[in-house]
Image 1 (spheres, one colour):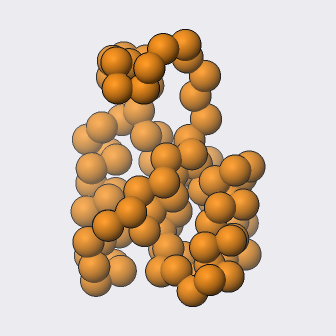
Image 2 (image 1 turned 60 degrees about the vertical axis):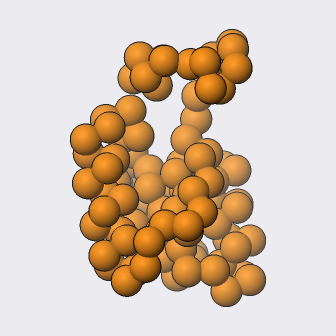
Length: 96
């Protein structure tokens, strides 16, 4: 299970809740320092990466799946973004 935006706010709160229930977690967030602090509060693998960088994100997910020895079956997207429109209709450019 991977949580993006896992270093603070809703992402971190979700990670803490899932960790308390025994989930095997991986956290992704942009800021390495905050991510490192977050990982100390939950048992999780992590990668500091900007989710808008598709190549880096794909690499991070591949690395986390290998590190956790299992594929990501659940992805919780909690990286901060505020744009009007239906999620499925947003372009990649919106996430940059």
